Length: 299
Image 1 (cartoon, helix red, strand yellow):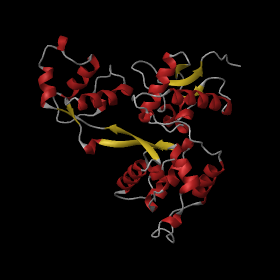
Image 2: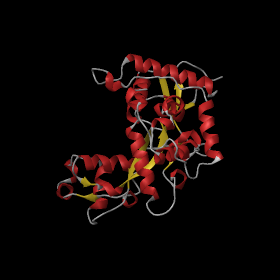
Image 3: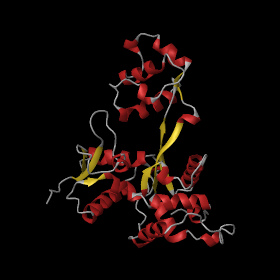
Image 4: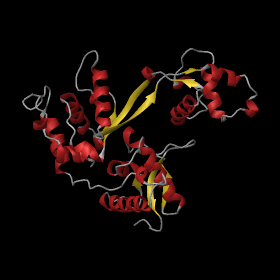
């Protein structure tokens, strides 16, 4: 863990949020009342602020969603051009068309022919290119999870005594269930540092060591969870200290090198919403969800 995280203090509100998160399967869940350490007006905003603060310290990570957007003058002008030569994809065109006659639309207003799991990426791409406008109030936190750094922080570094203001402060609403979730985490095998960020590589690409370590982690998790060489990807995300996009890139690289095979999720009934969201969304069909090491036959 970085020295910056070791030296961090967390507030009482941040601790309450962490305790709520520890009570969820896989220390991951949607941003709803189960992760809201309080009630009444403004409780959700307090929760979101605590989550963002913990994210800035590397203790948790989150996924946000765009709930509304509008078309820009540039986007309107583009729609007036010959659609056959527009520098956008057919799906992006449908997103723009959904917004052309309204001041604000939601992802649900986009044509049903555009898969729902593709809409967020399309909106972000068009916004980055100045064709759509997304205001800050339309970006909402959708999901949060405890990072591997966060697990190690709780186990090794966190001490209420480090914060003089919180040393003798009682935590209102702290329950025996919260204590149980905390003890469960402390009793788990310690997560070892696994992978260096590929951002440290001078060439800006994932280094060979990172790729090799990812393969080792996949093999270890496959044995640990008796996955029969069909490992759900959420187990890997919980273990490695990499951003979502970075891990996806390494997995695609391993697949291209014939080191692993990635398979889609067909039956979602056995997995939670947060576990399914750990997969890699695809334009058609379910997300890439299972990892198999090449050359290993199932038992």
